[in-house]
Structures are given as C-alpha cells and as structure tokens.
Image (cartoon, rainbow over the protein chains, first blue to last red):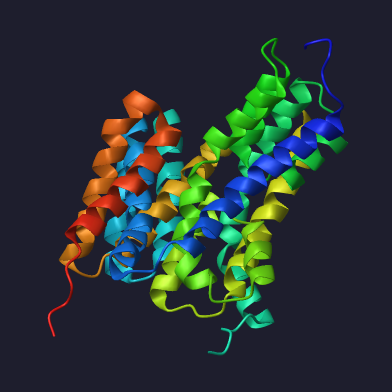
Length: 103
Length: 233
C-alpha cells in the first residue's frame, strides 16, 4: 500500500460520490433531452438490448451447462408464461448440470 | 396531471419480486467480503463500502486499486466511473417512467438501483407497473442480501460452500434471458435483441465484458432510433 494513503473516510466519500453520480446522472440528463417518439423508441429498445447482451455473454463465456440453461429459460418463459419461474428453473438447470458434470 | 402512485403496496410488490435476486446478490456479497477480509479491510469499513457504493464490481476494483502502488484519488474516481458507466444508461432508460414522480422519490429510489433490479423494473414497466415505489422496493432485498453477504464473507474468511455450485452466478443472466423472452411480443422486438446480443459478442474481446454490455445497450438504442418511423394514421 502507498505510504500516503488518505483516511478511509475520504476514500469512502470519493467512492460514494462517484457511484452516486453514475446512478443519478443518466436520469438527470434525460430531463433536458426532449422526449421525442424517436428517443422514446431508443429508450424502449435499451433494456432488450442489454438483456440480450448479458445473456449472450454468459452463454459465450460459459460452457454447455450455461448454454442449455439459457436456452431452457427462453423456451420455458414462452411455454409457461412466467418469467420469474423460468429464470429460477434456469438456475436450477445450471446447478444440476454442474453437479452432474462434477460427479 | 396527478403524480403517479407511490404506495406501500407497490414497494412491497417490488421487494417481493426481487427476493430471488437478493439471494444471488448475497452470493456476490460473500465474494466481496472474502476479498475484503483478505485485503485486511476491517468489517466496519467493508460494510460502509457496501452501503455507500453498493456495486460489487466497483468495490472489488477499488480494493485492488487502493492496495496497489498506483493509487491516486483520480484513478479511484476513474475506475468507479468506468465500471459503473452502465448506470448512466439505466437511469436514462428509466426517465420516461420514473420522471413522472417527484424528484425526491425518483432520486431516492435511484440510490438502490442495481443491474438485477433494473432488469426487473424495466420488465415490470413493460407489463404495466404504474406504482413508482416498485423500483425502491425491488432494491431492498438486493441491499439486504449485499450487506448480509458482505458481513458473512468478511467474518467467515472463506469457510463457505461455493455459490457457483448452486448456480447463483447464473441468476442475473437467467433473469435477463427470461425477462427478454417475456418482453419480445412482436417480431420487431427481435431487432434490439439481435443487435444487443451481437454487439456484446463482438465487443467483449475488444473492450471487455463490462463495456460490452454498455455497447449492447447503446447499439440497440441507436438502431431503434434509426429505424423509427412515424405511425401512419
């Protein structure tokens, strides 16, 4: 550790302020951007694109178990129509496949 | 225009829906607590960080940086800005819905904004959730899980079962996939899915997984903006 490390309270305040800025700034800035239909379409598309990105990265960096689970989640969400139960089934599938693979 | 509802019922609905995510965050909290204890950070300081920063990846990076010879305050700010830049996007996307409530309620709710509950809230909005307290409620189990995880992680110092064996590391991707599937109702909805997934996969080797998620969101938004046409009357 560097010898001249600031007091923990200073570090904590800096970290908290920076994290707070990230949580608040995007919301705050959008107040000054006119809510045109085009911008609303962009904002509506954002969650779908982020969710697809998160799922795609998990499938890519994971193995067969993760891929099967994510495909299963999407199929189950359509089949049973309950997204939360589908997601929890996906976690159970991963746990079961890892246990099976490790056993 | 009357302010939209911000009720206890909405708060509890959000909290109840986010309970499974709270367990996943608890597992991440254990990981952070463990790293903190290895870095000889006292329990009180680790807990204070978890309350004030409330972001696993940012806290882990901060601990690494603080313990290194390259530490400066500027580097600390830059590290957290870079890692939490995705929250700028999350906050922007919440504007049309959350902006209708009072600033105190909106900014207060954003204190408990995380990856997992943002996904859950965007899905709830899509489903017609009108109570703006839902976001704050959805953050409560996450904060509780994060603090309990941090505390147990620091105290236990590693004598714990592996959360990976329980699949808890896949909770966020599974929720993302499920909520995504539920939100695709028209073929046109597949465009942001394809653009976001593609951008993340192409971007990850170039900019890392954290930025790839931001890239996915921005690409999806840009394509949607470019493709938007006024509806014909």
